[in-house]
Figure 1 (cartoon, rainbow, N blue to C red):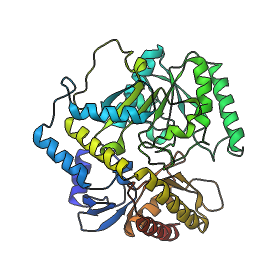
Figure 2 (cartoon, rainbow, N blue to C red):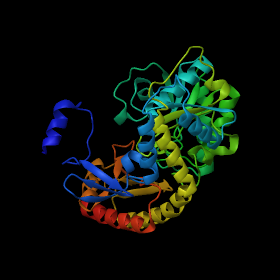
Figure 3 (cartoon, rainbow, N blue to C red):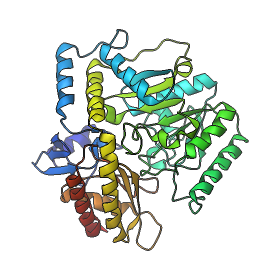
Figure 4 (spheres, rainbow, N blue to C red):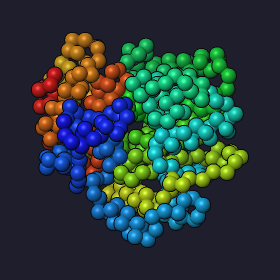
Length: 427
């Protein structure tokens, strides 16, 4: 055990998770590479949990941060803030929500908290619909709408939460249905649920479930849900903390795969927009955002420094078509990983869109999740020079792959080769 690890254990909560048997101290990064305190170099396929969106040490972002820090570090939302207004204008336009208003927070958890506050106040209801296998953050209210026991440490809640089918396509009671009949069955389940309850405030859903193992429904499910929700006046919150900014390749936002009934009422974002700086936020149409009848501010949300980083990062993303790169390179990477998975009896499924890919592991010859195998592959990949993540609603048995969106073809090929070797060595 290293001295730093011992010091970490002495001052940190026991539930603060660390990866690896011998935890890693990262010291610096460049592009899609990072280095540890021992000088080892790694190809980064997890990006600080989908947060290093464009690249490590991106010059445009570090320059914007440095210049803004040299002028003014902090002011709060009590004063006009040019970088905050400029970023809000761009996000409002990109969101697809008409007459949009934007409120900045410091994390995805806080963004989802704010969305829940808005929805429950607007509807006068503390009842929330959420998806099974979901994850929306670590706060008291966000934990209460999390449909994943691995990340839900208490059953106490300020909300009444009802869970809906549909977030996981290949497991559960509707898994054997065609996509069309899967959607119909999930819609029928939603309609039946609403027949037994009072008036929910909102449905909150991740278009692709992140911590749940990069699972997703067929395209169009949430559009079909929206038709039912609209009849009841129920709001739709799209949690885009992990799916936003073009990561799925096909769309800029995850909700756009379900756009048949229009945009969500509320959209939450975080992670990638700051490229490592602490930015979260909520976009909502004006009548929803303005429904609160008390004052509010944010001391750190919309910080001049983080907003400068967000503006530079978003500009780079759009100017270099990183969404298109995620589609092209992600398509190649998922093909390579499916070829690797086909030769391993431990791989149940390789799924994903763009640069958001999950590999679900099971005990060979069964459908039983194998978290020990996932942990072993994580270790073997590290030994081979590759950092990946893990998750999943079935005992954390999914390898999560989400590199920066500037990943090159050569790096995708390299990462797939290392991961293939790790799978065969550890399973």
